[in-house]
Image (cartoon, rainbow, N blue to C red; front, side):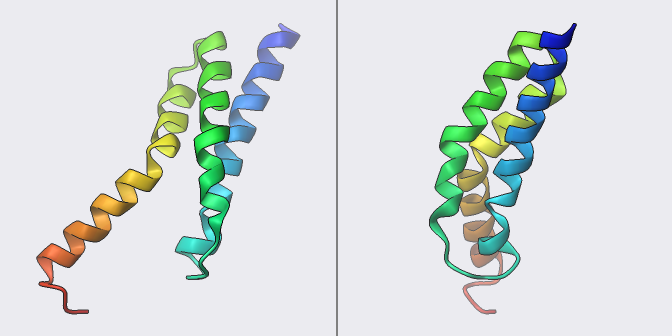
Length: 86
């Protein structure tokens, strides 16, 4: 039981850290290379969530793993819709 709680805490921490490393880039518009950590932290969260079979943690950590590609798609899509005009 304690092992499951520890794995859940580790997976949740990985998710929170993955979200927080995007804050300087998205919220403050400061170019920070911290977002690269999502490629290392999110897979750990996926593994620990899979060990305890928490589907929502697996899905959220997977989304954070692909967050760079999701944000790139949204940026290019917004640029396409607005014809490159702000």
